[in-house]
Amino acid sequence: MAYYLAIGLIVVTIDSIEDGVWVIFGGIALFVIQGFFHFFFPVKTPNSFRRFDTNTISRKFLKFIQDLDSGRNCFPSMHCSIGTYIGLLLMPLLGMGTFLFIILLTQIFMPNKSP
Image (cartoon, rainbow, N blue to C red; front, side, top):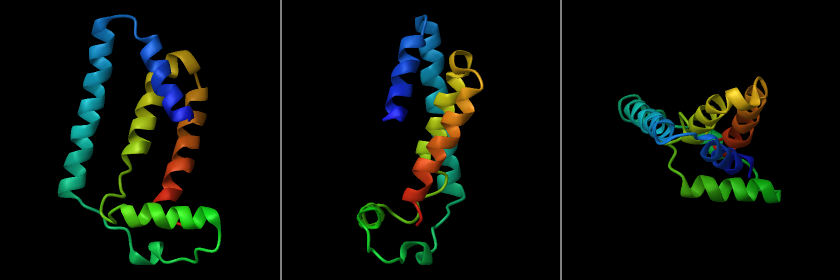
């Protein structure tokens, strides 16, 4: 939820069309760079990371997500990259609190890739 609120906060803080274009350009550049690494340096999550007991609701949900997700598109996580980009864009507004935002996002998104 905070992830999407932060995206909305960026939209609110854009002062001009030029600033908006730079935000969009930065997102596209991040996507291209991430795509380069995903294509030329693929990483596959070990199968051992996907074998675990599904004895709780959260682990059943994790198993469901991992069944839909390819083991190859785990690293680097685009959610973490976009979250970091959002956090850095909001640094003038949030100050050092932006690092807390970035750390919390990585703690939320990374467990979805491995138990």
